[in-house]
Length: 509
Image (tube, rainbow, N blue to C red; front, top):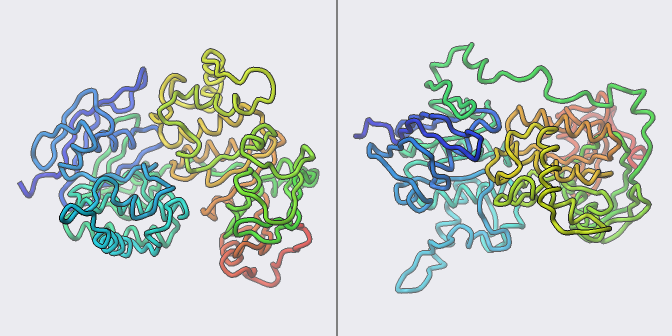
């Protein structure tokens, strides 16, 4: 029994409407191993993970766990077997404390009373192992995306699972946090835990995995031990298109020189920001990096009230006071936190109509199913979303869900596009398509501001990058200076990597 696989999946199939998501999928996970599951957006990775976690029921096929046929018809059934799961969008409660999120419906009880002392001791030790130093009594929503993801992993580990399912667990983590996570996973493996690691980051999957399965169109097309992969097989798995990023304006100086200032910000402060002055021009992609960049987007979208300063938008008005006002003025916010921009249980058509109806300042604001289906069908074709408009948005892959969020904002014809980690947690193929969409929005006359913690994403996609350090503008990087090393130096120290490369602060203001 001890030599048998911990998990054996045979001919699992799942269909959503007319779309086949899993098509006779097979998988073997050995005991005490880390098994990577790789594939493009929509290949079926997330659906298979949800089947094994009891969230989605398969149409047919069998699952064996620990040598016995298993019926996993609910999350509770999965937990009883010893299967833990960390999903791309964890079902956590941002308004509740970290401690409460960790122990939802599983508080330790002694003599009929909840033991907060035990809760605090267990949570602090587990978070310490994950390299996360936070106040367990603080609201979860006060943490950054990477910290929230580590809390989600801690939730799963509290159950002491024998098999841990990880669906793109480090999509929100920086390099240091990812390395710490890998160290934790290797430690769990050394203690005998088995893991299924679904990821859109091929390099991470290859670095952490003992075995690897490639899934394409719902089928397993390759399954091998990591050390047995041939060079041609590895090249096939990692095959990328020739260029990840579309052509930036900085290599088109004639066009770049015609751009006019459209957003002007003078002495703006709010949140962690203080004394920010800058301009953003129509047609360009302006990158934002460092501490304070996310606060700037929140101010521009009406999510946060300014403390000082002023701003002027293309319509001649200042900062929006609410999100609804922002939408009606053609200011949109697209976030990598898909849980904030998507109603997963509602149809794709309903989600795409959500902003259109709310942004109207004239006529009927009632939802029209017929009109919504027509708009959705048009956007589904234009954005190459592999689904029918009647299907739930939550049934799509991460890349498909992000396209739905983009599509609903495109319907209002935005003038200003604010992007906060728009490609977080999606595969390379979907990233390329979303990068192309971002460039198209800029080329159509939108003002595009992009914040990302992936510095290579900023240097590859943006025409200019503004670096923030401790809530203040540290400088601008453009042209030959636009490399990761220079940007990293600015956001960590507030100083350029080389005095000869010091940017002209007047050009920023």
